[in-house]
Amino acid sequence: MSTTAASSAPASGATPDWIALVREKVEGLRFGVVQLVVHDGRVTQIERTEKTRLPAAPATRPPE
Image (cartoon, rainbow, N blue to C red; front, side):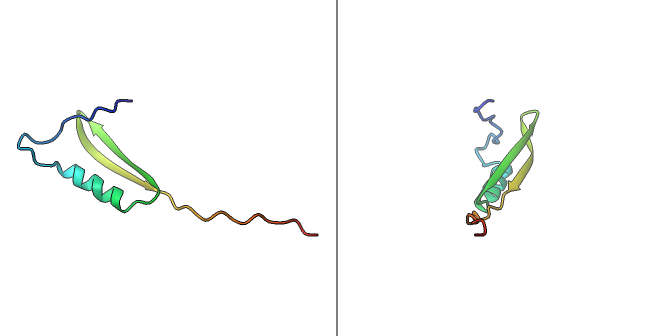
C-alpha cells in the first residue's frame, strides 16, 4: 500500500473539487470509512460507509 498521494491538483494551485467532497464526507462522519477510487491517477469515485455504534448491553444475570 502506498502512502504517497498522486498530484492531481491543477497547475494554477487551485484545490481540486474532490478534496472538498472528501472533507464534506469526513466532517459528518462519527464512525466509518471514506474510500477513494482512483483510475489512471485521477479520483473517480468517493465511497462513504457509516457505522452506527450501539451502547454495550448490561450483563444479564441468570435467574436464581
